[in-house]
Image (tube, rainbow, N blue to C red):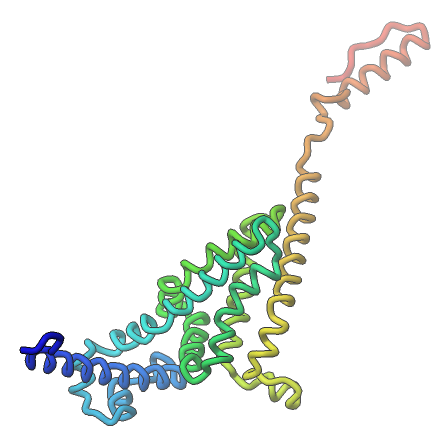
Length: 276
């Protein structure tokens, strides 16, 4: 056998592996678009098989069921999104050092996902819609968001702490909650904005979204952090120690007793015991 040649048996195995991989990719592509259009509960394995043009038996050969396909759809795309955003935040942190800004932190977190929607819409539009569905659903949706996207949230919070050092953690998480909802609403591409604006704006215009979103959300973060600090200051002022009626000043009983004694002395009479 000449050097560098591949045994016939290995070539067959490699060919079968490539065929199997290509078959699974076609199934996942079809399932991803169906889930994006009809949601998790609106899709059956028969729907996926019909979309691919194969028998349901082939679907069952590759996957254990609908949840198995749905999980594979997430596992194929979500980790890429997470890596992109983690890398963007890492680069930003290295570039600015201690000079982190709210706009910069949010921009790093937001732009990575918007970029793929702009540059590779065909590959990312359907998964963006699936993530939008999951982020607005309790149970199954929250489970997927927690599993795949929680690791990219905490680094963002850490950056925001540097940008807003006087803001409490609770308020920062509320800010993230609003950003997350807005982000996945963008991914849904509902078209409602087009109707409302009479065509002036488009929910598909991710270039415009990229231009406005980080600055808009940064203003929101600053506002709620300032409001939280003001409320906390008022609460602290209300709960600060007052001059107690029994200590830290003259009590009411003692003031009454002192006044009674002084009046009696001016009259030249013996003061009577203070009323108890």
